[in-house]
Length: 65
Image 1 (cartoon, helix red, strand yellow):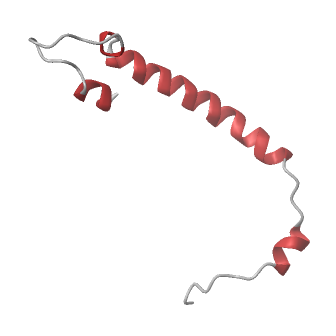
Image 2 (cartoon, rainbow, N blue to C red):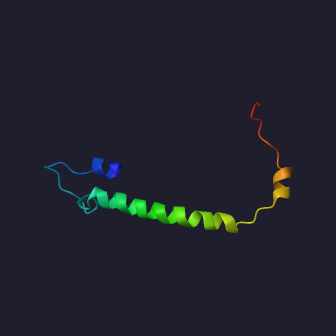
């Protein structure tokens, strides 16, 4: 939304087709996509195969503790 606000043409500039769409609509579209991804992501993650035994064999990063 903010990038679209920044790219809006000035009063003496000719707007392109992309710039004729109100920036609020781009923000709304991004919010809808974010809601859909956020809703479906837990289902995709829960369906992925997870084997705790493979986690135990992986090398651990040194965290300094």
